[in-house]
Length: 113
Image 1: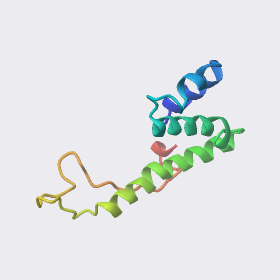
Image 2: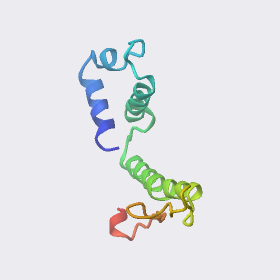
Image 3: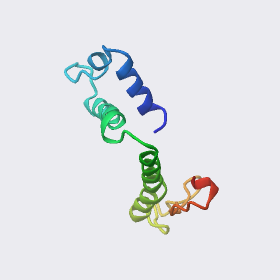
């Protein structure tokens, strides 16, 4: 989120051969899915999610918070409810796999801002 995408954008902007060498989908060794995701991250960084002012940065950060701390945990809970069992009957959520707790954004909570 904070390393891979910016690194790709900087490489794309700084090296005129970057797109040809790293995003060539006709290459026989190309992992098309991986290259497409990489290209989408570059597009997001330069076009679709590019912040033009401070309020855009705040909106982007709020959207990422919601995605990672509310939507993804809710999806996991929908797919694997707290009482879920594995095929052998042991609890799915055990050991290092703990039941996620979705978090609503609160601007008064220091760790949220």
